[in-house]
Structure formats: C-alpha cells, structure tokens
Image: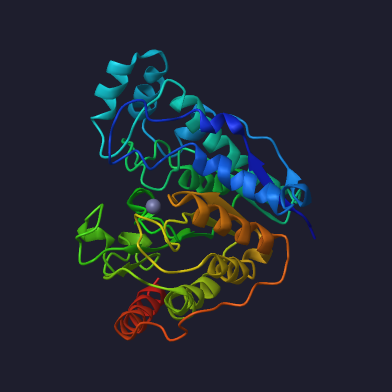
Length: 359
Ligand SMILES: [Zn+2]
C-alpha cells in the first residue's frame, strides 16, 4: 500500500492578483497561498511530504469540463492591458483577470491532476495541492466567485477517463456553495457531491434557490447531490461534526467511493470575514481523518477559499498533519450542536438517504 503524503505548491500561482480597486475581490490575495506554505514550513510539515511539481493543465483537460468559448476568452486575456482586463472581468460575477491569470489557472488545474495521478498511481497515499485561482464556482462557460477553471471538477472527469473510476466523492467544506461543481455533476451518478454552505435562506452569495437542501440532483444523478445550507452564521466544531456524522458519512460510506476529493475552502473556519463561522482549525483535522477512511485512503485535498490568513494557514497545517498520519488534536469549545440546525441535519439525512436509495 502506498505511503506518504504528497504536497504540491508552485510559487508562480501567487502572481495572479487584483490590479485595480474592487472591494468584492480584494480578499483573494496571493498571500493566501504563500502564508499557508510558510506555516507548513514553520511546523516542519513541508519536509515530511513527498514533493511533486505542478504542471500546466492541457487544453484538452480543461475542455473536459469547460466550453471552448470559455477557454478562448481566458486565453485571450494574456496579452490584454489593464483596461481590457478590467472590462472582460466585469462580464463575470466576482472575478478579476491579471495577465498571468490564465497561466496560474492552468497550473492550478495541472497541480490538481498531478495530485490525482500521484494518489492513483501509488506515489503517495493522499495529499494536498495549494492552488490559486480556486475552482468550485467556475462553470462550463463562465468564471465566477474568484474561480476561472473548476480544478476539482476537471480532476473528477480526468480520474473517470484515465483510471476508469465509477464512484468519486467530492466533499466541499468551503463556506460558499460550489454551484459550479453542482451544475457540472447534477445529472451524473458517478460523482457524489456534498456541500455545506452559509445560506441564510438565500440571502448569502451566490443566493441561489438551487443551493438549498432540496436540490438533490437531476435525472440519473438524483440522490447524488447533497446540499446542507446553514441558515445562520456562528456554526462551530460540534455543528460541523454533527453534519458529518448525520448527513455526509452515512451516505459516503454507502456510496463507497474509489477516490475522495475535497474542495477545501477554509472560509468556513473561525475569523473568516466571508463565513463568520466559529469552527477552529482543529476541526479540519477531524474532518480529514474521517474522509481518510474512505476510498482506501485515496484522498486529494485541493485548496479553494479562505480569507483570514492566520485561520487559513493553521487549518491547512491541521489538514496536512492529519494526512501525514499524526494523531488528531482534542477539540475544544461548545460540544452540543445547534438544536435547530441539528434538526435540519436529521431531516436531511432522512431525505437524502431516501433519495439515495432510490437510485
Ligand atoms: Zn468560499
């Protein structure tokens, strides 16, 4: 059995940055990546990992999920001046282009696929790719929410094609709904997509009806899309654990994936201005540990959001430490989950368990 945890990081992905003033986009800074990597070094975790270089994702790989029009627009931005970049960025909801964005997004795709290859070929047991721009909001034909190409969705399609996989689990613990990923796989029973997200009865971005609990997939994909919308902020460790115990894990074990991928956003962690949740970095060690029991341990963790630099870096370190096999730390704080949200969880598990069994 493969051993070792793969870490993929390429400093070039810090060159993608906002060139003008935009209060919506200015939290997606290059330091998200560099400070996470520095913290991993500080805890001597980098030296314990197997290093695999990033590569550029190919056009064919990007086209597994995206339209040729989308690829063409992204490609055309490489030679644009600031004014032109600003104009094309305005065509999308919360996205900014830099002349090196296309190159960085291709590296983000390629790094993700390198991780899938490492884990599938046995070069490592599991691993994490620190990438920018993130991917889970990006759609077939559109950039969205800081995301240009859907790294994780491309990885799932790639794994199906290259390794003949029939069951892939995507766990999206970012605090935003990965609506891009949902759209891509909502009719596909070979990909089980789970997302929890700040929702507040559709008040919170992206404010979509289809982010609610009753979007369970379409056609053959019915029962393979699980949304757990949080209708209030301040969710903590016990709420996240309850969601795993009562909603995700029973279905995930029944699904029995051959590969598990995490859309790993840490804006669901304490201090984050987007999430406004209370879960501490330690909870990500526990969530990671549970997912390591699936798919014979084949777990690929791909960075998505996370905008409080300290909280983000500590949570990344907790995840990597756990992937390396270190004991999970004690969880502290309030241990009783929020009653109202727990009831929503119980309802969800009944509902989704039922939908799932109908396949
Ligand atoms: Zn997010």
